[in-house]
Picture 1 (cartoon, rainbow, N blue to C red):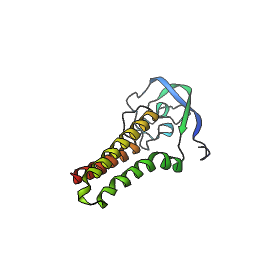
Picture 2: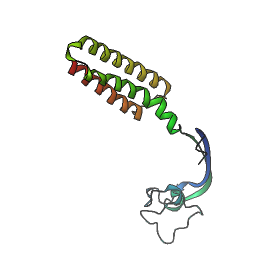
Picture 3: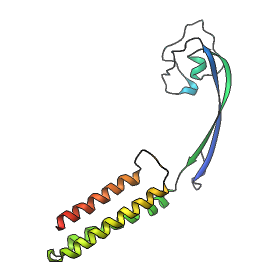
Picture 4: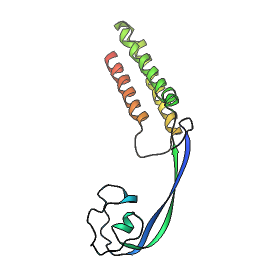
Length: 162
């Protein structure tokens, strides 16, 4: 794929596919889940002639107009140590400081509430900054799930203080 030290790599491949008209247009499934080297789930008739490609559009569907398709991939991978230091260490440190309220005496509730409020504000601001750096997506990232744990720890410390 690429050098593990590089965060951004490019890859491409060229595959042969077949176009319409298809002899067996409904036969679109492969047993082995590999579209580019398909083993047909419903075998076509014995006398069917196939193009030279193993692509599902040629072998199973019986396409008769073979063309080449160019696929270009962009892979982005953040090095693991940098991800841990940038994403997980700051909210982890905030959580450790939040849990310090458990070691304080009960008469220091104002200080405890102040620490919990500051930690919650810090966690929310950090999460907002982190969200601004990541591309918009409808799915939660691992960092989002970790921040939910941070918020939960903070709120538990907050409610046990009161």
